[in-house]
Length: 115
Image (cartoon, rainbow, N blue to C red; front, side, top):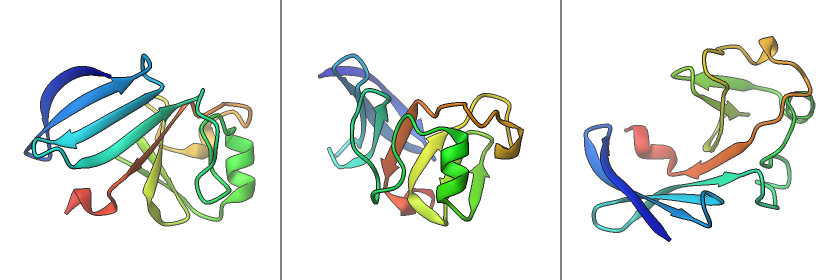
């Protein structure tokens, strides 16, 4: 595990660690409590047997009923704020993306981090 940096998010200090050169990225508050884990496309498995790293836009649209983009960065699916997908830079509408585009990162995190 490699400690990358200390930084601030939403006014709180946190630490970032990478496992296996970014296979997993773990963010913790300074007290050691994990608030999110990001997986790259080499992770196998799915979230709620539906969403997984490496899913295409077309498949995501066919498996979900609602998509919401927050801060032009993250896509939330079906009102579930425990998982987010990283959007391509500068895109604020999933309908603008090619259906064969693959999401290369998923992030599982505390839904109430924004409070």
